[in-house]
Amino acid sequence: MANRWIAEWRPDDPGFWADTGRRIARRNLAFSIFAEHLGFTLWTVWSIVAVQLGAYRFSTDQLFWIVSLPNLVGSALRIPYTFGPARFGGRNFTVVSVLLLLVPAVLLAVAVSDPATPYWAFLVIAATAGLGGGNFASSMANITHFYPQERQGAALGLNAAGGNIGVSSVQLLMPLVIGAFGLAAAGLFWIPFIVAAALGAFFLMDNLSSARAPAREQLRIAGRAQTWIMSLLYIGTFGSFIGYSTALPLLIKSQFPERASLVWLAFLGPLLGSLVRPAGGWLSDRLGGARVTLAGFAAMAAVAALVWQGLARHDFVLFFGAYLLLVAATGIGNGSTYRMIPAIFRARATTGLAPGTPAHEAALAAGRRDASAAVGIISAIGAFGGFFINRGFGGSIAGTGGAGAALAAFAGFYAVCALLTWACYLRSAGPVAGLAAARV
Image 1 (spheres, helix red, strand yellow):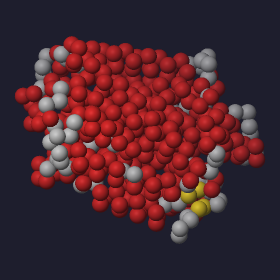
Image 2 (cartoon, rainbow, N blue to C red):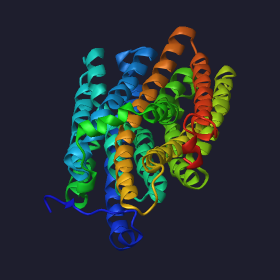
Image 3 (tube, rainbow, N blue to C red):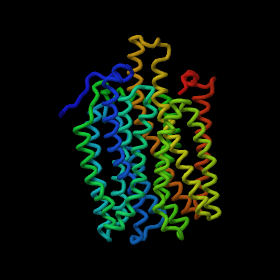
């Protein structure tokens, strides 16, 4: 029980998958989702706490810094977290990463319990919430190994959605918890769940011997052009999701102060974006991830203009409805871009090899390891988008009094991402034309 290492793992073998693999994979996926969900709740809890800090008399831009820093730190931590499962085992690393969430939970309670807590201390303590952001990279890198290629879009979509919905959990539950028990409860509330997730991972998750790889071998993936192309696209999808989700409460309070009582509705954005994320993976399994990603970026650029119109007209209904559509489009893009990653590295690894041969099987395993490493790096770089979104809004409001300039910049970036997706993965004469034929 203490080791829980599985020596033989062949998910692409239909017989093995039906007899043994499916049951084990589903169990690990379930507890991975639980742990990752808690990571997201602690990562984004300051999006609600910041709205409640009126007694400290911080400016809107200062509050956006408090919300931004967990995104920045969490993005950076995703890089080392990527290599944790391959180095220590997926189950082992999950236990440790979940227990680390006790740090931001306890420190949050300490910070808001003292009315003399200085602004710099809030910044430092909010930054520790970035520990929750790192969990996503280790969880996704681990689950990649458990599922066969044709099921990875749906499995990774479910795993990611279960984590993403943690943003919605925070924004729905915390106003109620804070109202009933005080601001410190926003941290203390999660402690029993953290302990339960750590115990569940310890007793019911597994390590895969086939997933082990030295960090130096995994870092080679950073030299691949595909890693950086997909990182940029993921800034546009997941970076936008986490940025828009955490920015919404402060946007409502600062741009529609007469509607401040409706801040609790902010949970609908990340809830919708999380629920549609598996649909992005499911559609990509059938239509190809690049096609779905291209459509997602086109929709995001168009809907960002509608959000701006809602702000310009001071029309809360238009603003909020368009904002929900925008977050939903990022959710679809999250699922489709993650479906692209294993497909890209599998196609690159097995090009020119006959299926069923020993060389093809070895290349397939190498491609899966490459995809696992790439998932972490791409998720780390992509998550920086959450920092840029919040700082974009904060800087735009401080400089112009509104968020219109930030939204215009975001829409332009989505247009660039759409062009890049078409040029690299859909254009038959593109620089990676072989991948277009593989229906990435």
